[in-house]
Amino acid sequence: MANKTALVTGASRGIGRATALALAAAGMNIVLNYAGNEQAAAETAAAIEELGVQVLKVRADVADKAAVEAMVAQATETFGTIDVLVNNAGITRDTLVRRMKEEDWDAVLATNLKGVFLVTQAVVAVMFKQRSGAIINMSSIVGVTGNTGQANYAAAKAGVIGLTKANAKEFAARGITVNAVAPGFIETDMTAVLNDKIKESIISQVPLQRMGRPEEIAAAVVYLASDGARYVTGQVLQVNGGMAM
Ligand code: NAD
Image (cartoon, rainbow, N blue to C red; front, side, top):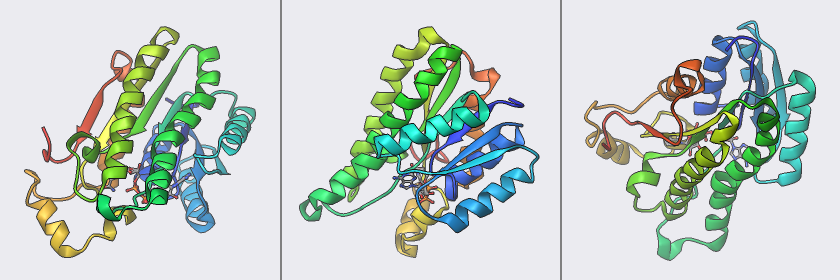
């Protein structure tokens, strides 16, 4: 993977940060996309550079087509190729359906599903010319099993699985693989908002009896991005401590 380039969306913190660091540790140059937290993005970029690879920091909302296209143009100008795309950016707006506002639905679908489509569309234009590439989309256990209070999020994450499979078929002839990773409950800012009672209830449903770490999701992404996974496409790799089988 040395000297190749990976674009990771939402890479300033959490799973995206761990993934960008793991791909950098494997020798890849990193396009670090972030939504707005300059300080976190700068800190992550510095940590990536310490690993001896190059990093390009690009602020862009993945749901904004023009911003996404500008980001991909900047990435190819800087590095020439994009070999790996990790569609990681995601948000939650949890509430019960009867209380869910239309904007809660729209915001989650825009970032978590349309964002994956827009970034993929811009990046495959580059990958098609290369006739190679690996795309890894961040789904969720909730997209497989559903979850009370997460209708918008579950619908988006199930949509990501459908999109992954459709794109795997559509891009295969060009040597591009498309897979999804479906994490269980992982210790990040996203789950830090859950109270102790909810966390305990979740852990009681996990055979491995703990939440996962961002690095454990990053390792799955690195595998799917590696040469060892060139015959793997259209798959959903569940990394959830056995919570769903
Ligand atoms: P996080 O909130 O720590 O990080 C999400 C990142 O996405 C942040 O850097 C944020 O700035 C970025 N982002 C949000 N909206 C964006 C936008 N419009 N454009 C660009 N970037 C944007 O969350 P995390 O736990 O690290 O989650 C990463 C991914 O993993 C998400 O897609 C999430 O749905 C998924 N996931 C997380 C868990 C978990 O338990 N933490 C479980 C399953 C799936």
